[in-house]
Image (cartoon, rainbow, N blue to C red; front, side, top):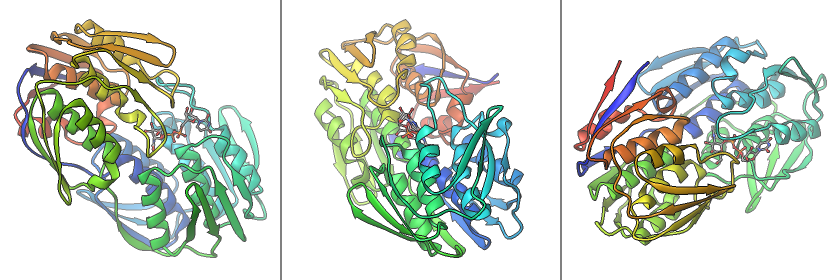
Length: 417
Ligand code: UD1
């Protein structure tokens, strides 16, 4: 199994190009199933989750040509409606093929994704909403067996909780439903805005009618198109933290700073010097790191996917900080590993009290999920000496060429087989 070896503590200096967004690419790829025309996609990140989604699409009959981070998808002969457990179990976003398959064929059998290390992660909100569009659902042997023999019919749907995945599945499904659908209490994450832009570019009729409410008028057929996926805001946030924590000096580019205002404000509060330009952020880390309290929340709140990374930074703050994790119930697994490196973090339910003034000591570490893995790299980057991070397959699910990007800005990091 591959590992990463990191020698801290080096200041990071230079430029980092941010890749395309994994979490925007996944629903966009799933939504291509709506179309029977050729679709050209650009700026997809080269990460494992995208590979898995492409394999899933191919298993459903999509013809895909890849060329670096561009792909051409041809769904003119795509007919299958079965998404297997083997593919969905490794990547929860596999459930996103349910909406488009139902919209196009009126039936689908998709493995239920099950829980994962950060929480139970049910799909009840997706299923209840699809039922409102006229879908009959049966759960059998771990599969969602769904059918709508007369097609989907537009409806008024209010999500009981803000869910990124459920909002995406329902937006996609509603594009081909008969009549008008309104979706309220929607997630408004930038990745959702990107999905909507893509669907509109293929002819779908989608409109925001208030902050969290969408109106979608079903169309008969979805066209083809060309689209470039947005930047990965979580990757960008991770490198901003890397600069702050190593008192480094990084220019992060290929981004839209406006989208990560919340994160920029937090980094400024902590004491980093952040200059914002058009498609670039220049950050200089300050020796003095100030405490800050954080609560994760749906966009535009602070993202749960950056909680682990900011926790590492707060371990270095001058005083105690409080982190409240309000999205997932079990997302502090990294805290125990950070404590093994000398951090003083105590967890009570969904609250983490992070004592500051930590001098991280190097250690051999175990990654538990995607964002937890990267938080261990961040801690290792400021621990003097050699750290080893095991189980980095989690990391490869969502960070493109992380060791190459870090090496380029001065980190001493390498992959061991
Ligand atoms: C997406 C992101 C993930 C991010 C999360 C929250 C992708 C591929 N993944 O995950 O990186 O951490 O948003 O920003 O884009 N819930 C239910 N029932 C449901 C659906 C969700 O109870 O049917 C709960 C979840 O368990 C969680 C909360 O709602 O507690 C939010 O989850 P959701 O926004 O749906 O996250 P994902 O779409 O799975």
